[in-house]
Image (cartoon, rainbow, N blue to C red; front, side):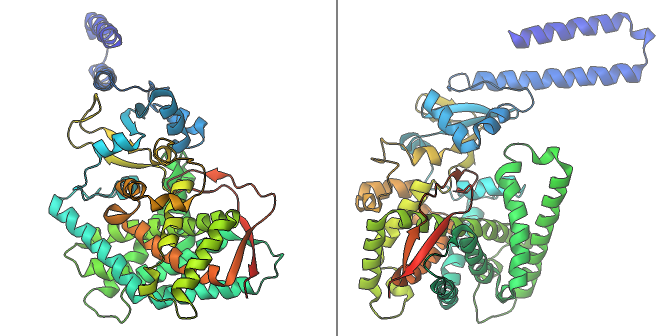
Length: 486
């Protein structure tokens, strides 16, 4: 009805214009006609999208230009918006991101229908590349498979080559905490971000970042870029603020410049320390592909590692029984001997602690895929070129999949079916993204070092509020205290 009325009005206006055409300048006429044609074309596109999405429950645009962006902002975050949307409309819902139709999937069952196990593009990395306006891995299947394999090799080889470095950085943090009096409040988020930045920069980009000033400079630019792709792009505020946009663009240029220099330095040379970028350089990639893949990994692995470490320790401070069980496993596996890569693999309960940390914290609450061909979920048709969101934060708290979903319970992963479901979501096993696999190992080493020597304790009366962006964090600083075991 709306489309017909708009077309009739447009025709009437053109008839009126034709009777007065000799009174007006041709260039003014053509410009106004072009504007009206453009508006009509946009309206037709929106109406067409409405018809395509007619069968999918959801909400209509709040504003013509911004779609449901105001609703997302008012909800506090995209994750909280999706929680409300799925509660109201069910597991498959639709809304509007600007003038673009978006479909969100919110249960394990519908996600399994959509996830293609043979697809080489990781949904979280795809979303990051899109936000950075990089090529979204748009090559053919064999090229995407090669790039994924190179990233996986980069993680494996950099962890293996730099295990001693990782252990050293963990022990430095331990020594720092051992020096504190038991009443000292430790700023956990700050310390974990610093630890992650030191670990990731040296293991991904090399010895340049043994210099603390280089790490601080990288951290500053990283923070500027990450805060905007986590919020500014999603709520549309970045493009409306020229100062913020320039700061973002300047920071991104500086990060890219650092990476280009390291790529140039590492090409055609052999180093005793194998870093992540070496695996990309040694592959059959062009410089732009190396830059994009190393940028995505550097940005994401820093923040995912920092937040995984933070949330794991937070949950341990409030779960005395879990911390005790983890301490016993660490003692049993390592005894009085050194921490080694081979023995790290034996920490099965620690693995469950980290899986439960990812689930309970909803560490990465949203990822995305572009629907490349028309598809079907349950009875709903998903049109081609639709942006499909995986509402992972909703899925990870679904009581139909996770009994007592708000309880921190690593033992739930003793159930093979639960672990299989978790893996199918891309949080474990062969489908986990390289950044998360890297973060799992770094956090495992850190916990092995800390829990062996320290009791990790919560600060009485502290309430930790959650901030949901691309990676979930605490809204304010998370404080803990520590005491010596021996």
